[in-house]
Image (cartoon, rainbow over all chains, first blue to last red; front, side, top):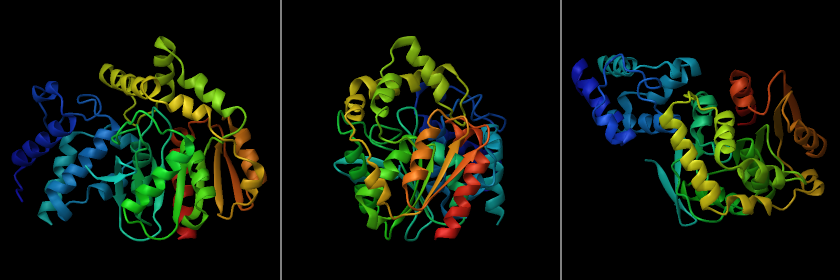
Length: 94
Length: 258
């Protein structure tokens, strides 16, 4: 698994684009500061799909559901792409 | 996407944790899908016990057939989803709003598969139910959009253009493009004798200001093993207005009944 921040961000951005699956998101820049709610307007059912796709991609080395379960609704609403990327990098360090 | 084939339809299912007798979460009608329970409670409940979430026919990421939205058909859907997912042992059903009605109907049809119930501001098929549903769901144009905006409390429930449009589209497709409203209007009423014969223990969580608190009171008076808890200040949207209270009650219940 890659532990490079830029590569992980690029992988996560690709998965986000795949989950949203609409043309506009291909032209939307996705960076560490991008907000799932305010910038990407992700619906909650899309977020469930995103968690599932990430789990498939990263396997047992990253526990997305457990990570989400420690967050309040307000935390999840305020979530930024960078927090997800950092979590993946943390897990990769072991 | 995690899906199972049941009753000829592809159902979107999410399982968290493995093992028999999971907690099965059931969401509400039309403006709802499994993500509500996922974010309100399921990920935390899954730390204690296995969990299964599913999208009802026509909802979320499950297929939307033109017909088959009667209560018995949706009960049959749940039974088939549990079979297709190879779930072992009786399940603990947690239902919100219409999902609570389905949980009860499932428990009456399949007592041997029902370990317990948590009903959150659950509807009941009673004299007013069909007309209420038709009144709410049969709205058109601006009134309908207003209702969608009011009643849909997504965790990302900001009313952005994209989300509003998509919700309105999917609600219209379900309300105008399927037999849902007619099917629900034709729902058979739950009778007191059937409720009195229910074996499973039930926790009833209702909002103090809910317009359907009377349904919780009727359940408390008829179900032999029910405990009614009224959540102070909350309306029918108790799942969002008192999320921590609802979640903690489910976790405590799941630990006690596993």
